[in-house]
Length: 508
View 1 (cartoon, one colour):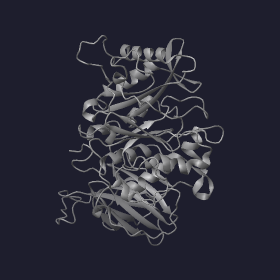
View 2 (cartoon, helix red, strand yellow; view 1 turned 180 degrees about the vertical axis):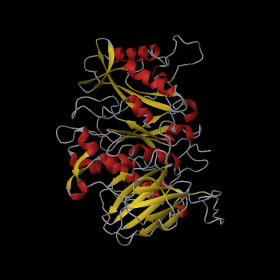
View 3 (tube, one colour; view 1 turned 90 degrees about the horizontal axis):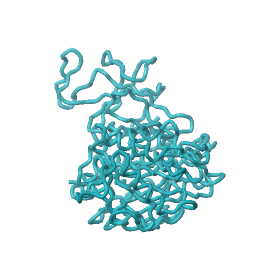
View 4 (cartoon, helix red, strand yellow; view 1 turned 90 degrees about the vertical axis):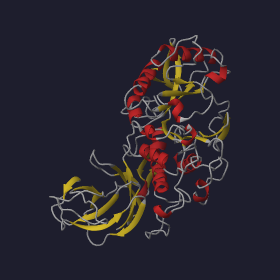
């Protein structure tokens, strides 16, 4: 078995192969130096290929090396290259479920890392070790100077669509709004209709039961909590009942509900411009401007009747939104170019590879939506300088649905065992594999191409690459926590800490 280890943490990690069986994953104490055979030591931002010879029980010890520690009973290691080997070692089982292309590895809750295993070939697996970031407060780690266009924000398409499986449901009932926020979701796609004078979550013609007031209460509770006070939330609001209710009435009810619920404001205002928890300017703000706030993204409202400042006072307001544009489209929000992909009406699940290629390419700065999806290499693209004065904003919907061959669960999750030729790999799994490759320093030519050799490709290690990959944008998903619980969102979040250069994108 050929293993490629990629270490994106700030730790030096030594990896050993246990010599005894009957081990349990988690933390297992090494009693002496003979308990395991050392395979390699990997420094921060380095990778290494290792061939495992002979029989192997698919378990590895991972030990963090930190200077100044001691081993056992005051037994100093003494040399700079033999820092600390923590007597408590993390034992991890390296395996992939039948037909899976990647998987989150099971580690103890107090482990400082997230670990992923991906399949390169049947006899070649890649292990990626990432720092474990707090998904409920990851934006607190980023500087105030970043415009939101230069931040990767995970989001949910049809955030409140928990009912009507398999046609209208887009999120699992086990991930209500409060859970989504704690799990790192920062872009909400709220779709509403007027029912008996009240705004209720809807998806198409199917009621989703949750009142808009409850949604606002959940968001306000999160933003006023200790973990959420330095976060920001984008809330896209779209009218679903435009065929029976006027846009003027809908817009009026939205504003009244925003004012009356927690996080609202007094109107007429006192001249201070205070709008409670809401940011209502029609521009892309910096992160520092909107910590603890909701940025309204209004896909409603006509010409802004009834709002102070009209279209300039109801948040980011796109003037165009072509229905299910395969190629994507662009529009301007003041000085920010917004690139958007929302191709949802795909013919069938056979279009999943094309959907993935189109929805991911705009997340790479400098790729134009009209470029061919079969770009030979990502490397020359994401190394290009970010244009000034503002980086472009990419908004990408990974979701798609049409009846009967591309329903939301089918597209997001896929079905069967695709690696065995018995099924189709879903969008979420393919995007996860794409992100794992990008974070590992790969430059994949095309997601539809499979490696044909188990031999590692000749390329510089992460430490010696001239630039880190750069992925940016707002990414909205169906069933965001599948196929791997806690898998896809942390990969998107980690992109916020990669490819940063002083003086670019607002990075200090």
